[in-house]
Length: 292
Length: 155
Image (cartoon, rainbow over all chains, first blue to last red; front, side):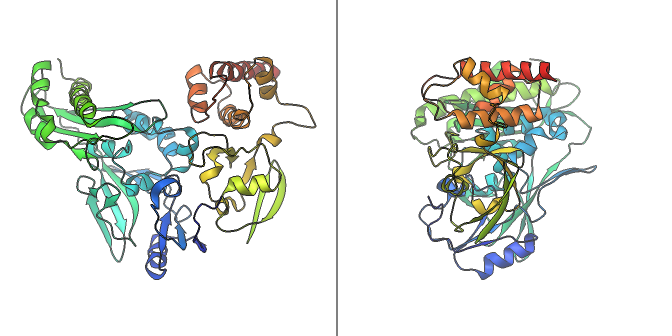
């Protein structure tokens, strides 16, 4: 079996600029990291003559300073899952999402940048990074950064040009004023399957239990991972109860656009999305120290 | 092009095409324990250990393995003697048709190399990428737990 019929050359750039130069120079070139998406369904019949493998381009790291956690784009899902830093950070939602990611074999090859760049609506990583308000650093003709909310255009399409690559994911470390709780949830047909619906939430409260800031993201219920801004706004300034949460999620159908596929119907996804959204808000609120 | 790597502690040089998957290179060079299953990284029959980590060799470009150290199921036995893990699979009936077995053994071997005292959940997670279509998962999971116990006793 030849994984790409028209492949002629395989490049190993030493750094991100090197990779971008190769992608701009070579016609029909594609970037590859773990290859778990690209080799299975990422090519979609496109002719590819050159692969540019960025897994030896110095982009595998997890670093922390006072304000940010920085994750190199070719850090594998296993490395995220096992990194001690993420076991203690943000109620371990990134570590847990990485642990729910398909199988050990796939986690050992798949990378965080590859998962975001593949831009599949079922990504377990994207909703978590939206809840964490991450930024995506991109290298092209110049260096750019994008908030992850806005990075996706539609399924399999991001704001990046063909020759641009993700270099780093930057997660802000929340300031100490106010307490923030986090939650992650994935509903799948089996342990190994991709999500039918997934999502994540981050809720910050003040001393009285009022919601000061809220982020709620859902996956697999639209063309790509989304933030549910209307629901977030419904929560601001309130002390949450089960009734308030349920009412906030009542009109979720306006925020989502689920599709029917082999895994679930649009109707089922819509029904599950409302339950998941409410559950995520409640869990994050309680984790922040709120009482329900 | 040439591919230099180490398989089961032996240095090897293979003549490969840039388009070859690791699974093809291994099978055409005699490592028939590496099974050809789904070709989409789902079933785990083609599992091999690359630098200590399991990967699905059917969706792994062979060129990624330059200078890598690989373990296939052929490497688990030493001097014609099966490993404790392999013995436990036989003893506990964790094999039926056998097609998924090499992959399962390698997933379990990779786990035990890192974690000699796995909990039940660790073993289930480690084997979650290896599909069995005949006997199910209870016996393989039991066999890995039993092997971990016996290996600990042997030390």
